[in-house]
Image (cartoon, rainbow, N blue to C red; front, top):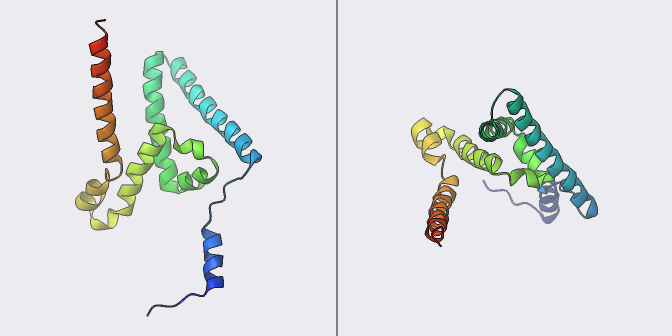
Length: 150
């Protein structure tokens, strides 16, 4: 049986679902410091990898691997979405949103089984993005190669 909800109950429900983002100038200042913290954390990881004896390029590769593992962990704990409400810049770091998008699709469809649920739906959102990125890289690389002779 379908229950009909009145306007007041709906407004209470809608307010409970609203994002708790900061508004105004304090939001900009908060985002500035949060973005700085993320960059500082990433640079700290690079320095740690450098101290372990890796070169700059290897350190950046291991940094991306570490960011993906951190994103997987935060998504599994349910913290990624909560952090995204007040730290929107956090989501725009490519390894974070890519790992989160893949894992969310896999977690939502795990009831359908491993092959058709998890593996089949894992790249539902990220697949078209990856295809467009590969095509853009090929076009840009071809463009740079063509004009490298001038």
